[in-house]
Image (cartoon, rainbow, N blue to C red):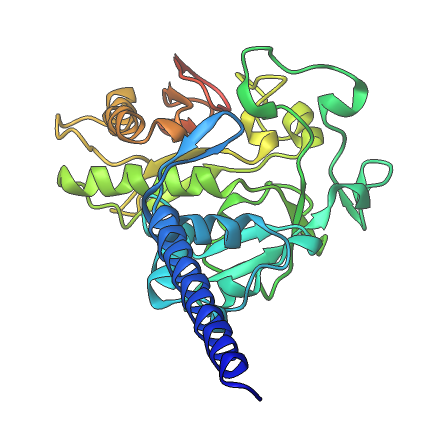
Length: 331
C-alpha cells in the first residue's frame, strides 16, 4: 500500500470515528431530553392537560390499562403512588372492583388490599343472577335517567360483587364490610349479589374522619341501607320516601347513623340533650366540608327524621352533582 493510500485510510478512520462520536452524543442528548420532558412537561389527553410527574402517569396507566405491569417492573416511588391512589382520598380503602379482563397485577403488590372481580352485568337473566332475584334497572326498559346526571351514572351497573357467607365480612375500608351494604332481603339465598361504587365508601370514610376531628366517637357507624336491588327498591321494606331512580340501586348511596352507645338509634352528636334530625344535620355539615375539599365526590345528602320504627339518619351519595333535602321514610 502506498503512503498516499495509508494516509487516506487513516483519514477515513478518523472521519468514521468522529461521526460515531457525534451520533452517540446526539442519542445521549435526545435520551436526556426525553427523560426531562416526561418528568416535567404537561401532556394532553382528551383536550385536558396532564401535568402529573412521571410516577403518577405510570400509576394512572397501571390502574387503567388491561394487563398492567407486575410489581417487579415498578419503582418504589411508583408503587407508593399506586397505593396512594388505590386507597382513595381517605387513605382507608381496602378493595377495588374490576371486570374479569381488567385485573391488574401491579395492585397485588399492595398489602391488605384486594381486587374483587365483578360478575358481569350480562350474567343477569330474567331479573336474576343465579337464584338471587335482583329485578331490572330503568335503563333496561329504555327509560333514560335525569339529563343533569353527569358521567352516565344512571346507566346499568358494570357488574355485581358475588357475596357468600365466607366473604361477607371482607373489609371494603377501615370501617365498612361488604355485608354492611347488602340488600335486606332473601336471607336464605346465597350467593347474593352486590353493586357497590367504591368512591362512595371513600366519601363515607372522609365524612367519618371529619366527624372524628369534631369529637364524635365514630366506632358505632351503622349502615341502615346500602345497595337496594331494583325489585327491593320498588316493593321491599318501608318504601316511603324512596325515589324511583334511587341512587341506592346504583351502589353509590348509603343511609347511615352513628350509634356508638349501641342503643339502636342515632347518638346525640350535637350534645343538645335530644336525638332528632339535628343530629343527622350535624353529619350533613361534615358532608359539606368533604365535598368542598373533594369536589370529585360531590353528591346528595338527605336528612331524615325518626319514623316508622327507626331513628334519624342521613342519606349520603356521590351521584356527581349536589343535592340536599329533608324527609321521612326510607331514604
